[in-house]
Image (tube, rainbow, N blue to C red; front, side, top):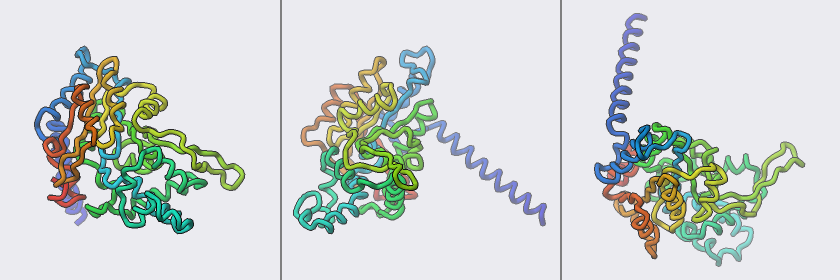
Length: 338
């Protein structure tokens, strides 16, 4: 009986090994299976091949292989803005404490269940609101609030946790770059402390490689236990021109690869900064043009797409260039999964 169990265990292990080997071989043959065959996918592969081929014209030394990614709208959906959804509960609490706020935006929209107003807020204002709603909170308490949000909150369209909606093609791209010696960093207008809670499990990006908007903090050693506490004052807004400042302060190198998206023009400067690298880097711009599987929207002034044409960036059409948007095991097929 024991021998039979051992033999059965051996057969299962062998089957599992064959499965893993098959998946690895498939990945080696096509590291970006969720990307449609075409110019965009080929441009990414060609860039990485040149960057990692010694004596090639586009070779990038390993220490300079830095890739920066915006988060909202680049790695996961930004309708509604995830950090805006996180702020719903504390903002409603503020209205209870001060009912006169109910007539002001974004409080009025929030009470009506409309997250659009929060998504359209200027990033500096949004960061300031976050400070006002969490001022005096210890870092540990804030982290626990964020974890609770991701455990229980659900996206209003797909009904799954927000961090289950990372774009499958972009997760493949992150893994592909890391497999070829690139450091992958988040460089987003979202709060750095908010993103750090889920960046590693969601994207494989450790918290020390997250650059975002920040509030001022102070160290409170007058109470036991001592703790870092958040203040209501904004320290840095990591949006538009602020992204280069954040990248320089945290990394000290220009990115060789950067990805952003069409929405507010907030990624233009980061992508221009990357393309003007002494060895021109790769700029990737995500265009949301797939209302059936995700969302379709444009900028009023078309600034990002205009900059892409002028700067020779690679523009991703979600509709044409992505075979699937999300992991089909998390989002049902026919609604973003494929």
